[in-house]
Amino acid sequence: MKVYNMRKKQRGFTLIELMIVVAILGILAATAIQGYRRFLWKSKTTEAIINLKQIAQSSVVYYQSERSKNGVAQPNTFPSIVFTPAKPPCFGGVALYKPDYSEWKKAGWEELNFGLTKAHYYRYRIVSTGVGKNAVFRAEAQGDLDCDGGFSSYIVIGEVDSEIGPTVSGMIVVQGLE
Picture 1 (cartoon, rainbow, N blue to C red):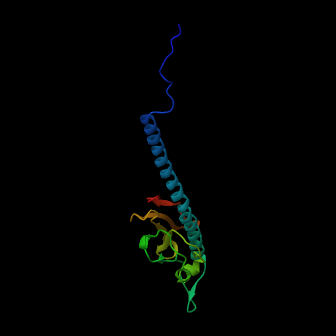
Picture 2 (tube, rainbow, N blue to C red):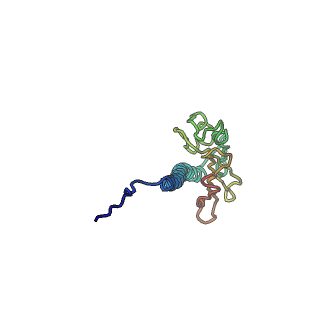
Picture 3 (tube, rainbow, N blue to C red):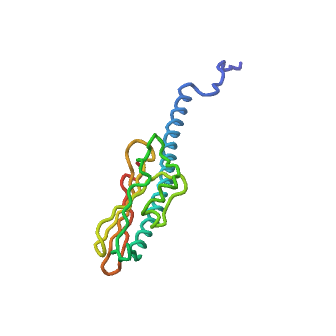
């Protein structure tokens, strides 16, 4: 006599198994979203790095060029320019500055032949002290990519070496992905 197993074979997944899979997928998605956000922020910081290099090179050229005021030769200096745009990053809750051509036509930026014609995430300034061989400048880009009130700053410092002339330091990053 044959004996049959009256139980049917179990097919599919239990509710617990499905919940575990959903939890794992949720964790993976959260990790991927954070990684993607970080990738986007890093890509936006290249704006600051590229523009600061250009500002630093233009500042060195500015220092080396001869200038006169009312026919009187002026000593070699680096330019000093206040933050442009003047509004702090994320003013009004938006991280992106809209292009404003008049901002970049101010004294200093025109002499450096620098200006931004497209939307940008950072504002820029140059602070300089001293003249001749004692001249020093600090160019800075400041932004707030996530609009949390914490600023990230990228800084380049230039000074005059008595033997080789004006030099520019490497990039200093303060809270780079803030």
